[in-house]
Image (tube, rainbow, N blue to C red; front, side, top):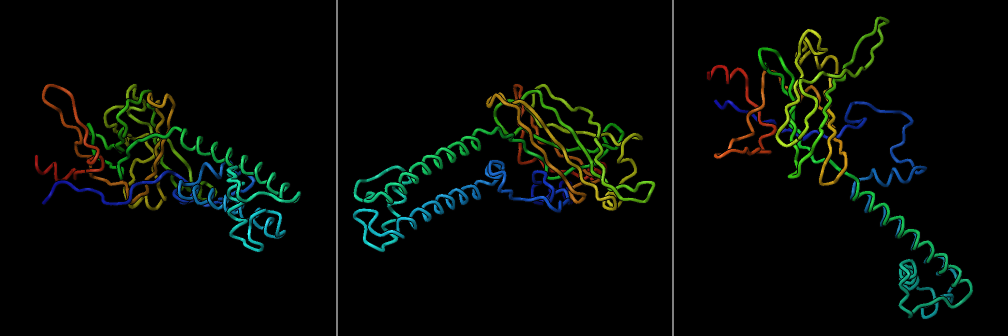
Length: 301
């Protein structure tokens, strides 16, 4: 019988309302009144599709204006939409090959408006690309689950995280929380967030794997809970980390959450650090979620 098990589950995802089991009536996922927030919060595929859709829409609008007045663009076939759409693309990009050109006052006015629109569109897209590329992003690797094991004779909740970059992070600060459903004296069910005190919540240098440990003592909100009772109170554990990335010269943040199905009692994290001859250590990031059973390890002893 193997004394090691590995959770083959989807990796935890960044915290959002849906991931936390919450939804908000009246809250808009896509608020067109705040296009900047919408543009920077979209995923890269969605952002690319949105920009291409805007670019195509602008060209279709101006091509339709040229198409409605045949003869306003020189060297185009009357009634040919393909000619005016290509003329619109060239004008929007301020290229102007010199083959097709405005031939009337109407054509000059429409093309002038399109040139200004194209310059503004290019500036906006360039700015959004800069914001998306320059935004500091943490590369912190999180274990797939949380374990509850005995540490120094006391039950302890543990979560393992690793700096996924080769560069050093400093002044790392971690906080651990649990969301629980509770009954008030009036019989109302509310969901409250409780902070879990960590044995070590700050690291001057975030280089090696970091075990976030919360001792489940008499003062802990988790005292007396097991998997079944945590399911009854809809428990969710989530953590935040903030650190300074010296390569980016900026403070980065990251967060993750774990449902009850990822809180494993009677397990502990297996070693992922090996010592090298002559000093130094190597951390194997592929083992970050590897766990061992407390019972099996105790029997082996």
